[in-house]
Image 1 (cartoon, rainbow, N blue to C red):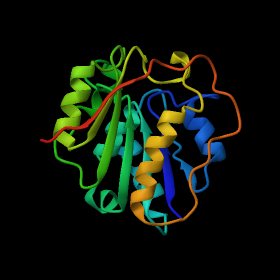
Image 2 (tube, rainbow, N blue to C red):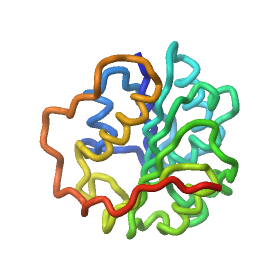
Image 3 (spheres, one colour):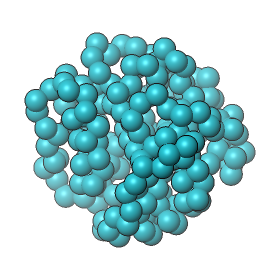
Length: 204
C-alpha cells in the first residue's frame, strides 16, 4: 500500500481543513506531528518528517501545506529517495515572517521525484510569482488557482476534490495498490475556490 504522508504547515491544520479530513479518511494516511507548531525549528520538523518516511515499508506520497512544503524540500537525501511524489500546496515564503526564518532560504535544487505545486493568486503567505519560481527550481508542475487565499479552511477548502484528484495522479504513478482514492463522504466547509486557471510543468 502507498503511504500518504500528510505534512501540515505553521500552526498545524485544524478541524475541517482538507489535510485533517484526508488524515481521517484516506487509507494509508499518516499525519506528521510536530512538538512545536508555533515556533518551528527546521531541524526538529525535518527530523519528524524523516522519521515518518523511514518508518514506511512501501512507496511514499507527500501531501504538504504551507511551511510543510518548505520543510519537505529540506529533507535529507535518505528520506527524499523514498518519496514517489509530492503534492505541495500553498508553499510558504519563510522570509516573510521572522518566526519562520529558520527555514530560509528555501532550497533551489530540483526535487528527485514528481511534484505538483498548487498556488493561489492572492495567497497572503507567498506571492504567486514566488510559488512559480519554486516550481521552476524544483521541476514541479504548477497549478494556479484564482483568489484561493492560503488554500485552507479559512479560504473555504474542506474535502477539496481537486486536491484529491491531484493526489490520485501521484498515487497512480507509484504502481502500487489497485484501489483508487475515494472522495470522503462529507461536505466541504465553506465555499470552494474559483476554478482552476492553469496546469503546466515548469522546467528549470
